[in-house]
Image (cartoon, rainbow, N blue to C red; front, side, top):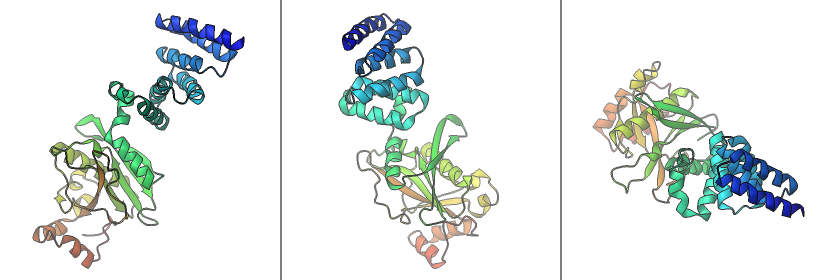
Length: 305
C-alpha cells in the first residue's frame, strides 16, 4: 500500500513537472520518498525538480539517493553530474558524467552544450586522471593569461618527486591545445625543483601560454628564450632566463600518459642561463651531455648557470 501511494504521488509529480510547477512537483516527489524510501524514480524526480528550482545542493543529495538505488539510470546519473558540477564537486560530477556517457554515448554532444559539464570532456581532464594514476596525491593552483583572464592553466604540485625532498610541478590544461598537425600528441609540461616556490608554477603557466599563443610545438632539444626572464621575478629571471625542453627521464614514467587519441605525453622544462643558451647554440646535439659533464643540477634554481 505504501509503495502504491508513493507511485501515485510520483505520477502526480511528473504531471506537475511537465507543467513546470516545480515546487509542487518537488513536494510530491519528496512525500513519495518519505512514504517509500527505496523509490528510485521519486528520488530522481525530486533531484530534477530541485535543479529546476535552483537548488543544486539539495538536488545533488536527491540524485545520490536515486543513483544508489538505480546505479544504471542514465537520467539519474546525468542529473547527478549536473548538480554536483553546479556545486563544485568535480570528482563526483566527472564520475557521474562518465557513467552517463558509458550508458548513453550519444549524449556527449548534449554534455558539450552544458558549460558546467563541458570542462569534464576536455583533454586536460584525461591528462589529470592519467597523472593521478602516477602521482596519486597533488595540489593544484590556477594561473590566468595576463592578456585574457578567461584563459587559465592549472599547475599541480607534488612533494618528494622525483626524489625525496624534491618537488615536481606539472601543468594541467596545456593538453587542451590542438596543434596544426593533428598527429602530434597533446602535451603537459613538467619540472623538477629542490626549491618549493610558486615561481615554478608561474614558469610552467607562462610557457604554456606562450607556446599556445604561438602554436609552437616544443620538441625535445629546443630552447625557448626569455620565458623566465619575462616574469621579472627576483634574480632568477636574470640568472636563468630561458628554458630548455627535454624528455622527462627523471621520473622513469611510461609515456605517453594516455595513448587514446589524441595521445597525451609530457615535456620536461629545464631553466637555463644565457651562457648555457650560447653553449646550446654551439652544440645542440651535445648540450645535455655538457650539462652532465659540468654536473649541473638542473633541479636547483639557485645555480649560477
